Image 1: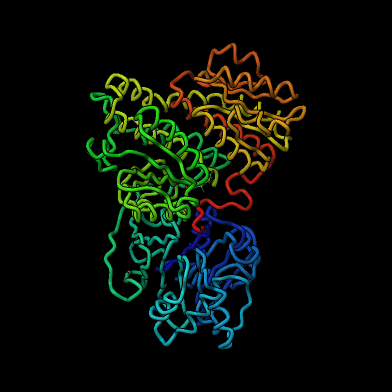
Image 2: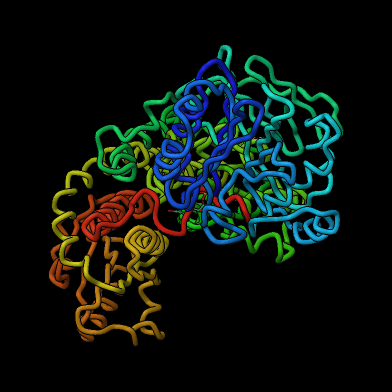
Length: 613
Ligand code: AGP
């Protein structure tokens, strides 16, 4: 959602704030702003659009001294929730006095009633945002102690927040707090950074403190005082980030997405490393904190997630049922909490989330805890809220995923899910020999992906034949059905082509009415059980004039004969084939979007981490 940066230290703040926003722009980018204190006054610069617009505007409006003399400030890049993405709605927002500035990530559910009360007391609002109400509320509560005023104001708030606050009346400090939206503090020597996520901190330090829900902190250049909202001190450990600033750069690629697609062999090696035990033909996932006996008591696995993380969960469902002979089901995280799920102590709930901050998935985690289930997280961001609230689980170790379209996290999620299925299976009827064969298959995944990446130029050339389409259908069976869904999501979210994924058998039950001459059907016809039926579905599409791009297993002449275009995938176990097949579809979507001149890393209307329900 939104990106927050606060800086206080020995360097000039505005350039640091702008650079921090650039690193967070993938979280939301429809408007931006920053606030500093200059000669005892809060000064604010705001702009609609990208962070670059803010930088240009501040350079045009502010005297040069402001870029060199101010040593602290706050900034924000917005993904609009209340009020259109205009300059007036951009953060920071000020209180009535103009002496207090606030940036906020989250949603204040009761902002209308708060606004009415404040207007009755004389507040005049200039924006349509919930955040401006919070600024006025803090100002209304201010009695000479900013920390206490923020505490008092937040006690009135229902909803979620990650905030940073400065006041012209109390220079040299930032107040920050969180409930439901992440805040991380970067602890460097003589300077402190406040941010929505660690990517804005990496260039300063790898020493960080993650705030918990209902934490509030008073931050100065060399001190952090963290308390709860009742002003009681709390202890939060300093942790060390796994990655340095370089890992959040493009590495010479045109887009983060292409870099992250090509990083996948290494990311998959990181995800697999040390987690396979060939002596027992199983996986070693110490983060699960479970003995074989604990696993034997699990009667069902419920996988919850959103978007791409939902799709990896669907592959996990196939894998767990196939390898572990255990009931598994996927539930859309947003639905989970509201359907009063029938779960209990013998259910393992796997919360899948790259960011570890997705509000819908976090809500599902909390509901699963409430019902007494065994809850684990599959996250990429160490120390993220879901990782901490589940208390156990498996990190992907895929490194920062900057591009809004998830690629390396997806394939690492699938690899981890395959290892979970293997571990569960070996605690049941899956034999050592079968386990060993599957473990060797998992170990081969990085090289299978490298083989598909070698087809990048061919896929780029193929993409030229599909970039002017308005609609596209992705079809697959078995574990390739979720891959079809994921391929459609990749294409639609970065190229804006209307793409839908369907089970191959489903097309004839209605959607086939949409096929016209030349409509592209991307068919996952890998040599897996049901392929012959998929080939039949493809013939049904061809009979209606569709153009067929087939993803087929290397050497499968039968499948090749029915396709108009083909991408070959190395032969491997059907569950393992999901990963190289997905990589081919990532490249397909990327090149179409590139050829269409789309804003690939930051597609319109999207944000990297959806921290609102
Ligand atoms: C995927 O390309 C999208 N960016 C989106 O669907 C994403 O997967 C979803 O919002 C879930 O995010 P999470 O994995 O961080 O929870």
